[in-house]
Length: 392
Ligand SMILES: *Cc1c(COP(=O)(O)O)cnc(C)c1O
Image: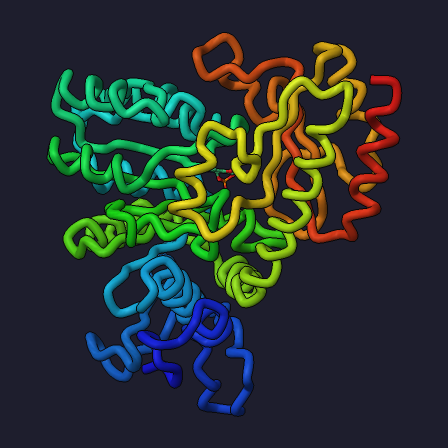
């Protein structure tokens, strides 16, 4: 039992307190990290507190799962969250739980490269079919769903790295017309900015490696749903296939989540300022940020998000060579894969995060860089970009 009112507390109160009961032994305000792999029963077949072996259940992981369920659903007693050793492990467990060999998944045409690789190279050979569509085009989605029985419609919004926006409520309605589960990868927006389950989605997945962890020091993933039968199947995958996350990684995400709201406010503020600065730069061909009024998804983003996020992609007029040079010329923005940490990162998707989709319909333009805008001072971030873009 939690000591806060889960139904009536605000996001930040739930983020700080859910799953964080006072430690009954010493009164520690921050619950201890439970590292033990095994738990002694009182007698054979009689567990003390329901815990027996750490792959299946662990108090530190349970606290994180409660915290995430509470944030994604708004009140943690209707949601079930399960956490995994990576975002891709979470996705694998979800797909194994929701699908059978022969089933079909319809997936957005610029989903995270690793999600596509999982469908194409890992689950494809196990006879899970997939079809790629543009999720911002509802007619295309309808045609794909009408083509053949589809078990899962897999959506990312905003997308990575093109920052396209899909209308979650409209897709949920469409998916349910065809008896299909709508899965939303909410890694970019986080529950602070967007609540897909409230918009009609059946399942939310996360790479907790990113904004939820928030400090680029842990790898993890999560699946959240209010569908109890599916939740049990995912829980079984976590236990029986064994990709659950460790106590230490669980703790790091719990700690990160406590400051998610304040971090996101700052990420959004900085990303908006950088987008507006980039738009004015003579060397820039196109800025992809849903908070710009001429972004094709602006109106939908405004409707379904409470902020436009911390990710910005930008294309340069000067082409591939000049773009690669920009990518290697920043100092505050570090050239590295991943995103969502307090520090600003710059990624060249064509040769880094999205190398696995090179040559497919998911390929990213070679004159594009993706910025994960951190929480540093805006003048330093813009100053850094300004010197890297000199001469463009
Ligand atoms: C990083 C990422 C993933 C995969 O998560 P890992 O923790 O790296 O396995 C999935 N979806 C999105 C949108 C991501 O950014």
